[in-house]
Image (cartoon, rainbow, N blue to C red; front, side, top):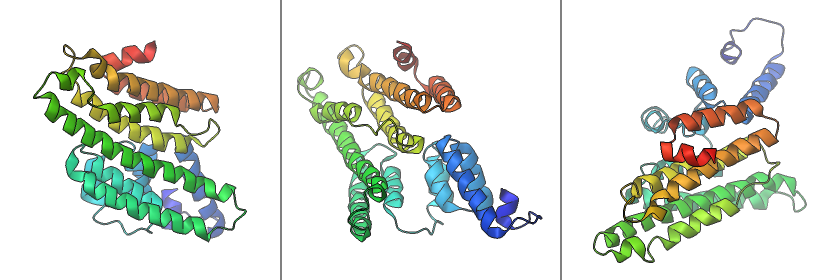
Length: 269
């Protein structure tokens, strides 16, 4: 595929057919969640669109920061804005919240512009935009999670009420909403992966925020572990339900190897 992209593959296959092969291969790799393969391919052919889409899912934020974002010249799309917003929040502190909110606003404008360009009766053509709207909403909710954790930690340091009282209510509501708001079972695997992989990043933030709460508030301490285990299990379940058994096994093996032991225990229940 690399040779074909560089034009050094000598055969009688027309260029149009070769482009179709590449398009279908990229689609299949994304549905099989082969993000490491796609990122390697993107690096070899200097395709920044592929790199932007695959690196954050591994995740490899350092390579994105140093080698992709400064050089990438790609079309302004809602998807690009979503990835840029993810990058602003990936350090999981309040410094990137303002940038993320501005980027989300631009992403919503782009999505609405594309929406109104579609014919009135094009229902199926609007589905990808609806999925992107959900991602944009969840970026905003992720920013609220980060702010709620930061504010709650300040207050809980001054009073025991912060640990046992009504703090972190926004965080709990958002995490509960995420469990209830999932794609359709028949939606493409890449749709599920995009959504749940970012949630994984936020569950890691919750785990880090409450890792010292084991003795003072076990419910908060286990909050991130519980939801991350559910997230991994849900993604593997959808892969199996869609007949992607290799993807199911890969998700479980990869996530089980990197999950904290408490999360692995919850996953096995």
